[in-house]
Image (cartoon, rainbow over all chains, first blue to last red; front, top):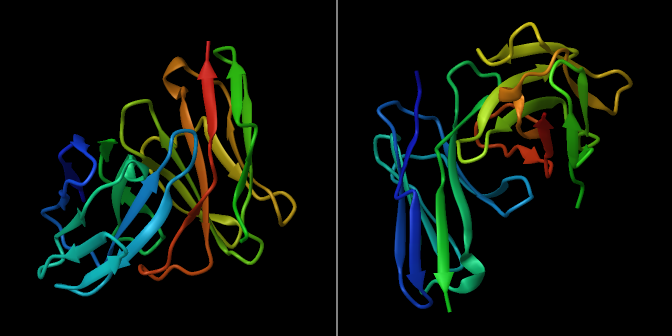
Length: 112
Length: 115
């Protein structure tokens, strides 16, 4: 069974601090996706990482895919209150049916 | 930007009743999905649907669940006899390709409350 474990589950920091969220698995994924979910809304895709070792940047967010394609990280530099939300990692299941397997999410609170 | 729309946003139903959750995927998308998220838990895959048939379903998707694309635009999830444990947010998603680097676009969900 493919599983994704995210850590930490909750993170409360002050504006301006840096943080890293981790997404780990014992399984190899062809790609991993990071979503952000606001209360009362569906997940919204932030980025997809496909190649082992790949690094993608989205403004103050840096996403990395592990060399072995079993893990990924999200690093936020100089966090702002607008970054507050639920961050989810997800990977495609092995059956090529589009099924996404989600981590349990990291709830980030950035205090002004 | 095209989006996936879901109705209703909140559905309250008595246990044992049938419920139909509706979704309008993005118009040129071919692959459709339902996920659910029980409060405080992870988003869980229910079913994927392509070419008018189920591609994959999870263990959660038992005989009480069914999906349909009745008219080429709507994609529905039916629960025949609801149970208390069916209370959750239900998300519909669609994509235009199956390739693993292609995004799934999610609706804002239907909150299903079973009394």
